[in-house]
Image (tube, rainbow, N blue to C red; front, side, top):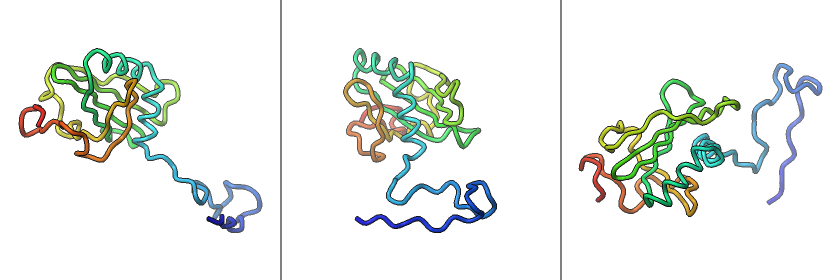
Length: 149
């Protein structure tokens, strides 16, 4: 596929000049979604290492990656098993403390419905990756009290 040349720059060479084409990705480059970026940040964090250990001990979890209330830069990651769950926030705008614990509990029913939209999976080693919603076999049905289908 042939690359197209970028359009002429506006305002001299200053990218901050009025009318400049700032913030657009280069043609052919697909930026990661904020959920994918949050999963990558989480996987590289201490929390990601914690989940990897829990996966080895408890088996495959149900995982939800979704918007967090309060900030467009925050993403909520929920990791749940039948008898325990953990939630972390990932702040894509905070380099000093990007991943932080939001909560944990024992019953899946304690988790709000928005955080039970199971749209991710743990690969070998516990690395979190996004999947199509409902694509994971054995997903938890919120209507059935958190039991596997």
